[in-house]
Length: 310
Length: 89
Image (cartoon, rainbow over all chains, first blue to last red; front, side):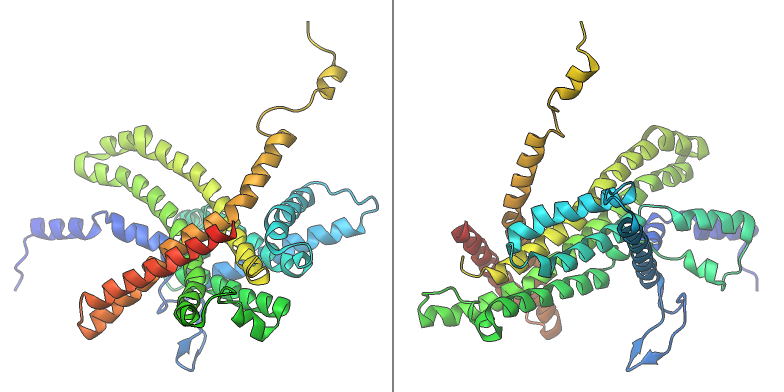
């Protein structure tokens, strides 16, 4: 028996299509769902290896950094006068800045050549992963798909449009990067002092044995807290910026629903779009600063392991 | 009225991008490393250990004791790291 009138049906349809700011924001920030992955891969030992959007973005970033940096450096090494120009000039400025201002003051002259490659790789990778999230590649692809391609819902292109494109806004990615830092700290201390002495260095010298017993668990907890702080800071900053931009832009649709399309447009022109542009400008700085802070802290932690008790 | 092009080129650069301000910026960045590390560790310790305490409370139904213990331990670890950085400097 039909119980709904046409008016009720229309209202139900409208409610179903109503703008849901929270869902839209999460869709643009979170990873794509694992049950609709980009590339299906088998489950091994209970772990689903299927490739989601963030993993795909990690591959894109890694490939981009590898190709761009390798080609520029090879071209630079082939030229006769060793004078960098264009992109190589910017790359050299970054390398020299990190070496002279981040790595050398933290780890010292002797260990700079050892730890410079790791810190530099982390910086370039995180910077590129952060920055690629600010470029609306998939939004443009979505528009093209809507107007030109008309790819089916199950096509690779349609699946590519779901989920956020900033891999560093995923806590798993930043946790993996922080894990590299965590092991680098242990390796740095062990290389500089030997394995046993590195662990002995956890307790400050000259401390009585009773105090040392109390200090060991505190030091071990401190050792675990450092990568956790790195993980949370980077992922939270990357997610927060995107949420702020999307929340401000969603005012346009919320006001359009509440008071009509013209009010929505007015809010957009007068308030939402200028503010979103301002926050995007701020995001560009945050992208740089977060990559820089991650590498600075990595260098400081490695330096602390090397120069224990100085 | 205006100096020749040569004169203007010879004048040392002033403002934000002068060598002196860049050097001051570099010095501040170098000094900020341990301070940044300590501030993040202080907050990270409280959030991580408080979070672990909260999770144990939820799991075992012992609210609020593990949360309080975790927060206290987080404070101890965070302030210990802060004190260490201060002793170092």
